[in-house]
Image (cartoon, rainbow, N blue to C red; front, side, top):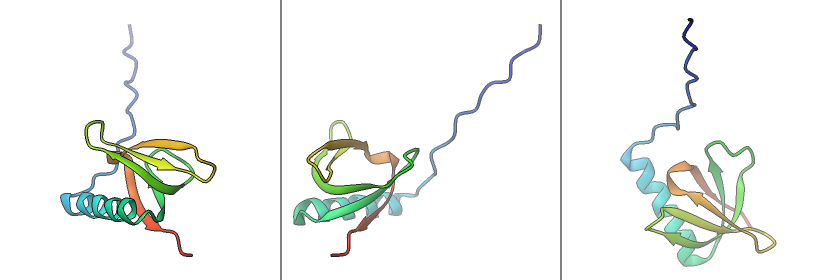
Length: 87
């Protein structure tokens, strides 16, 4: 009986401690100042744009309030980049 080849799952891009700290700093700043951000998220095709409504340290989820009041919960570890929305 032939063994089936194990399907390898795509690996999340590795980030060092400095990159993770920078993302955390940018999210905290956006949350404090209530500014809109654009998030690039692993395995999500479109970027997520909105205001950081909550940063849950227990579940490690970032709650982003989008344009029409919808809230998306994004795992912190999946956030690849944070950029501010130019007014």
